[in-house]
Length: 498
Image (cartoon, rainbow, N blue to C red):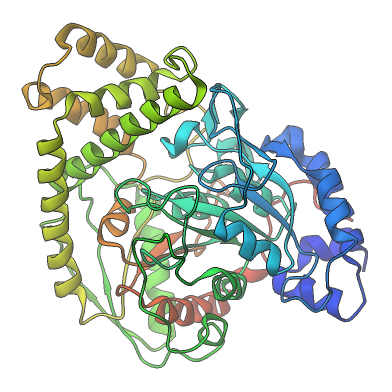
């Protein structure tokens, strides 16, 4: 088998095994990944910064006995730092070049991973489609007329296109799970405090952002989590330690689980028939695995809950923009996209008291959610309300221009005085996906799984949300569903290597 074909057919765990046995060298793997990156670069547009020469140099000195020795990897262009590598955050603001590695990067490198590029993100991760003025449109390898999701859409496109078998990703409102659902990948949003974001940040979006990966297989997600989890002195949170290894959880029989399924939209917005068909497919797979399933409702996860989430994000964006002004020493309003500018202005309009009250309401609802779903080992629910959208389908320019004009005229007026406008923006921004923010608020783990292909030939994944700190049960269930579905051998039909 050629190295190119091995890169296409194997997951990260399998490739590392070939390296350990001496069947493939790290240099050959990295060269194959770079060649694949260049062959697909125009089609998917998923690379923010190539790291090719540094990758080739690193590959020459890799210890072949490391768990993921020589496996090509990508770092998201947001939320993580690697010494000397520009981070753009999907923005035209001058790049940040760190003189340090994030703790997560240190752990990636210690595992033997070889970063070959940074992957594209929408500006500051604020859209669930990876499209930006700085880098253009990132496309889905299953059909390049459609989105790969966001905000980790570049990471997902690189994995789905066979450039790398696993890639770093982050999730503050679905940004791991949405791209995974759009591209036929596994996307684990970890428990709050499982993997540190330090020292780049100690927390992001009031603790709602987590970092992990999108991957080709459940076992890759589990192994990578074994190699990256654990607190750091700067971490404000620490998830409960696992009972064993995550990799062991991914290969053991989950036993008979008690599952729930949640089919409603928290926003009361339409859900496509194909999304519900995907959820039915996941339910059937779980039943085939021997699990019991009950249908539940979560009436308190509603528009007010999502609105409070959106307010806290707006405040975080406003704070980020203030930080960028201090970093570059000038106004950045001319560098950022209108949607970012509008979100930041909403955050500035809000008072500290309003944000605090929103957070308290979110925490109270999270306590109720965690308590009432505790009897279930996992809750199945959608990730995206519609199949992967056509590129450009969520262009918000018209709505943003209207809202920006209102903000200019109202200036320091309280947000609550134009609440209907806020509702319009929220619906416009979130109609594609209504569910993932729930677990970002509650801190629960949730894993997106590929289970379904639409009539148009596009993947459509669902998610299983677990108890806080219990990734092990999710990984065991996910691996079983992966095996039953036979999905592991499926690949996007983009320029398959011979």
